[in-house]
Image 1 (cartoon, protein in one colour):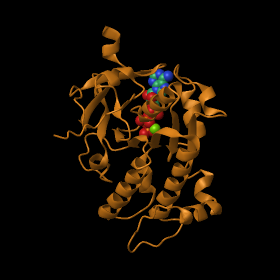
Image 2 (cartoon, rainbow, N blue to C red; image 1 turned 90 degrees about the vertical axis):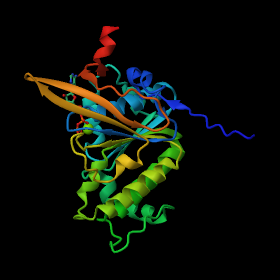
Image 3 (cartoon, rainbow, N blue to C red; image 1 turned 180 degrees about the horizontal axis):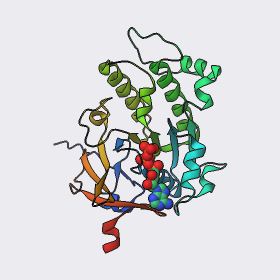
Length: 266
Ligand SMILES: Nc1ncnc2c1ncn2[C@@H]1O[C@H](COP(=O)(O)OP(=O)(O)OP(=O)(O)O)[C@@H](O)[C@H]1O
Ligand SMILES: [Mg+2]
């Protein structure tokens, strides 16, 4: 009898406590999602993931969609786990600026790159111009694929997917889902491990782009006010192929980044 065995290689999350609760972290080559409200610590989790990779000689790419790279680095520089050396030549962590203030959006040359890209997202009824989401994603993917190849990238953070909302498609959620699925599937095909950040709050059951169904794992971050104190909680609602913790876990953000209260009890 022929037995097919799929070896699951794990990629550390950058937060050892979460690795211990997930059989070692993300499965290599998967697309993972962090969902949480503003200020929950999503970007910090992304940086833990990338800098941990850099320490392991696994190069990382941060695709900045909302907060520009310089601001992300400025805020991160206060954390004990931040190491500026990883961001300078020869970088172990590359940052691509796709924020509205970033030059990539307005550089006419980058449009021709997009047209040459192998990935084509067909968008019926939507004009193919530089202000449309398909064109934007086309360009983003093209640049990602170039950097992944040139720099041998193994870890990607997309911060956040919610930037797709910059483009107005009214109530055409089917179209947005189609684009999001195409975009994330194409990135997954690059054989990298992806952490996509989503700004949906955990209390909102309506997924805007369908990313919860595309993702292989979902980490929900949330913030509660309990007796006048801000409580931060994390739960893992989904992790394909993994026997993961189902507990609601309390975490905090300190000068060491995201840490879990259970860490302190040990
Ligand atoms: N040194 C620190 N000590 C304690 N808390 C900190 C420190 N630095 C940042 N924080 C907390 O981290 C929060 C920012 O985290 P982060 O930027 O990862 O949030 P985010 O979920 O990405 O938010 P957004 O959706 O707005 O981008 C701050 O609002 C603050 O509460
Ligand atoms: Mg952020």
